[in-house]
Image (cartoon, rainbow, N blue to C red; front, side):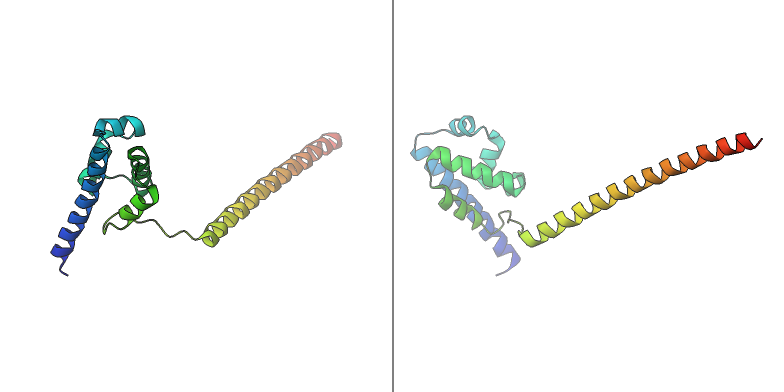
Length: 145
């Protein structure tokens, strides 16, 4: 399939998804303003979702939560609606979630914090020790004079 055909298919899929949501909303006698009020979503986002304008969509997490809220207010099965959304060719995709990588990063940060804290503690101890030595040297030098 050529790039132009893929783009047209993606646009059609987005518009079909938006029309599906708008049709379900209208079947239940709800206006777009009713959905905006019930979900507290910006009307521009609700409009962009219903019209398939992905260039106006924010980050994935916000769009997914908006679709989830929309489906809940309209009375659609949330899981099915989100599956339809994820099926869109150019819908923002979720990033790979690797719990081991997250744990490794957390441990590395913890080790860095502990190392920095230890270094600061050691620097404070050395500074305090040098201060005491300096005072001792000053007293000894005054008593020798």
